[in-house]
Image (cartoon, rainbow, N blue to C red; front, side, top):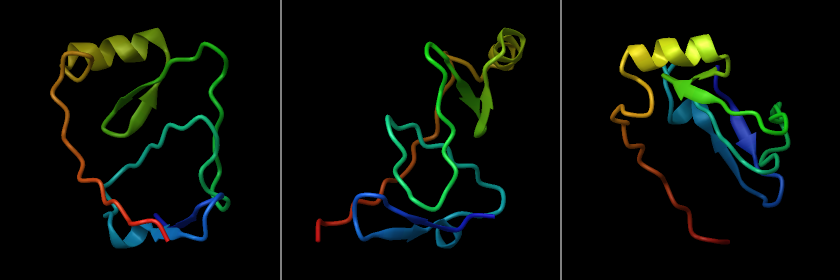
Length: 88
């Protein structure tokens, strides 16, 4: 269920349905909301999240389970191709 993301500070949009599949998960971590038409969830002060296969984990027992599966801090990550667009 990916849709078009419209940037807050520029007249630019990305249609994620064109570059993702129904199996994909996307997480963007930023200091302020980047888009105007999506819901952003603010971290609580001091909060730490670990992501595994695009799912966030914050409870200690969840993070420990991810670690025991070999997906934690010592895991290898898949590199994502970033598309850079020239400034307008």
